[in-house]
Amino acid sequence: MTMPATFPAAAERIAALLPPRRGKAWTVAAAPDLFRHNAPTARLTDGVRGVLVREKAQRLELVAEHPGKYAPSARPHAVIDATGTDPAQAAASVLLRTVLPDLDRATAEALLRMPGGEARDAWHRGNEMTELGFALLDVKADVRVVDALHGQALVWVTEDGGSWALETKGRNHNLTFNYDGPVGGLYAVLPLLLPPVGEHTPADVGSPFTRLLTDRFPQLSPVADDEVQIPGSCSGWIAAQGELASYADEFTPVRAELPAFGTDLVLAAAAHLA
Figure 1: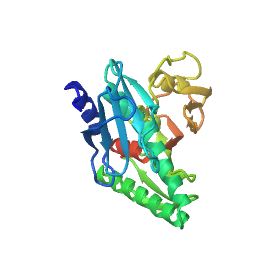
Figure 2: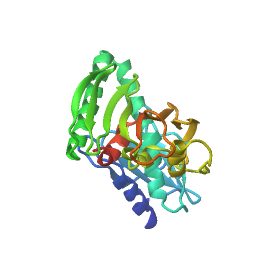
Figure 3: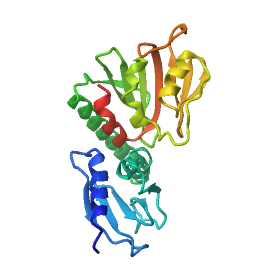
Figure 4: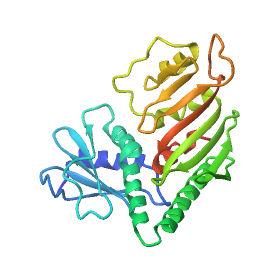
């Protein structure tokens, strides 16, 4: 099958926007599509996981290859408008936030069903945390490993005084950030972790603190004068610390819990966490 000249470039750029896993970069190759024979299709893989990217009617369809299944699903896991400003970036964002975490959860569930599943899962979880630790060390974060409720957590302090902790929670390898420091320390990483703005518009309501965040990140919702909510299946929050002032700026101290991200998204965000 021959793909149009414009499509391999889109697929290759999607792959380039995904961080390497286990030291292996994502690769791209033309692939047959079992369900839409006339749709140009590429397969992205990091050597363990695979995702089909196919072009159909001015859209990109993303189809994950779930472990243990004979063939990919006929139904796409996500659809991207190929006529948008940057469809490759939009596709990579969806892969990082939803599709790849779903694949990792499926892998975790498959491990737990095997003989000795708990031990296999613990070994796999430990390898993921080690990979994340080295990625943070690569960007000069002074990472320490500490005991946490669900195993081990990575903790470090940034140059501006923000304290981070990264912990795996639950049996599905969901990663949760905890942050304590100036709110400006979140500005660089939130665009990577939040869903697209979509139809959200800033709300001119709330306190100076909540407006400081919702004006910059319309996806956030004020729930109190000193707190905003982060959207998602496991909703997180950012809350002001101490007595609220009549103004707020990037130095306003906050505490935050950023919810349920996959390993790939954390690796992509690592440069903004040191």
